[in-house]
Image (cartoon, one colour):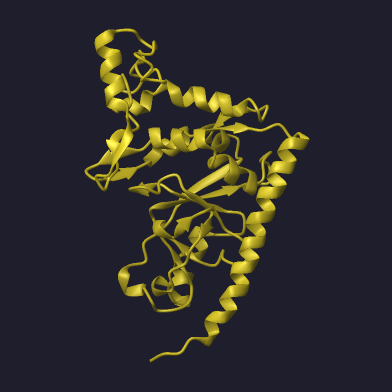
Length: 271
């Protein structure tokens, strides 16, 4: 099998110099398996693999490059790889699904209804036209049980699958769409929610999530394969603490500033 990540153009038809199909074809016909051809290909595309699930015949699901990159990224963190499935079995995390409130509920109040398009740059960008009433919120609040530190992950859609945001003390009162998963970290987990957010956004982990996404017609879905996500469990050394401290500080300070900016919304006028 071989997996092409670049096809020579983007979704708008703009041409790019990277075209993995050329290298895949060259490797196949020359039969050199990993040997560069005329210096044009820097990646070994073809791998021999075993079909471990008869229902999954998607090549990227068996892409060995993903596992190699995960191992390489785990090395500087001095960590070992652990899957969501293992973390669930240990009781370290819980994963639950969001809900759909229906279009009739849009604009009925001030409580955010968080959709996939609202997840970007580790935060929730709220569209006030999709806010809901207190009555609608209370209908889902108990079941969703959202709290500060919960992580929202996009699992359905087109281009945002795998994107994550963390809830904080200023925005946890909301309702989450069904195309998102709510990941809660228990007190027994050896990593904090902010650590999990950081790890989920590592390039190798994001590539792995992509390999677990299957496309139906034009829409992608992560499905139950979310349990197969692996991430490195880092050692608690000084370098890791320093990195995490910087990341955590930026996330928290930005959340406070966004909350301050909301005060200016009170100066709106209706025409």
